[in-house]
Image (cartoon, rainbow, N blue to C red; front, side):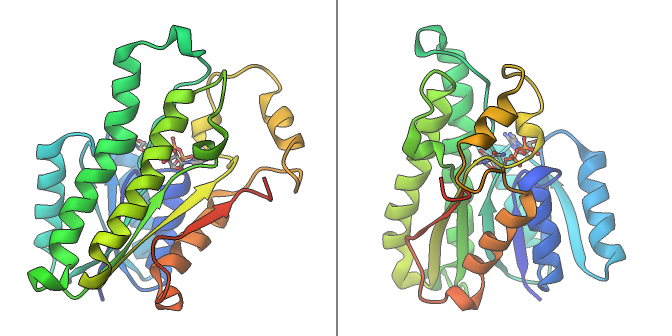
Length: 247
Ligand code: NAD
């Protein structure tokens, strides 16, 4: 068995991914920031299904906490072979002129710095160069990286643009070290990220402009992530999988 780390795995896309990866035989490190109870519930669910998992607290934007997260993983008997950079934040609806440096920095530190830090620590452990056995990383970006989300959350969209570029650069940097790096770009997915804020009727409005006429489920994103991590995608790196109902 080998370890897969999923950041922000106590709910939403991260939770669905953790559950699926456990079914596929990984020992899953379920990272959470605040909600230990929800993370424990994910772990209990996996163990009840005959899988293996453990919860690990860390704010991915905090370098010391990320270091501690990976040190905790080092204590497991198995090697880390998969990382899903999923933890992300979005503040709803603010036109550019209302954005503050505080909000911008908060979004970038979680959605960008957090991905960088986890990639750095994962690469140190997976790379052939450091005696690792190789591995795969999937970064969860967003369709917003290409639309820019004008009038809603350009800060979030720009952070996901950075995730796309990180994916390209890192994939090339570590391709010869046995590590594949890919990206999924979900469109509108029904999770708690959309539960608060936003104008009334937003879900219906957004769904109506999706060619498939509906949002996606977290489990549908998890399937794409699991495929990119798997040996079925053994010749895929630096690639982007749009999971957006045709949008
Ligand atoms: P969500 O809000 O349900 O889950 C995000 C998770 O990240 C939460 O568990 C949260 O606690 C965790 N998190 C946030 N900041 C953290 C930090 N600093 N350290 C550790 N954990 C932290 O949202 P979701 O929809 O499941 O989002 C998952 C990912 O998918 C995000 O990167 C998001 O940007 C991306 N995404 C979501 C959608 C969508 O429509 N839901 C679309 C495109 C991309």
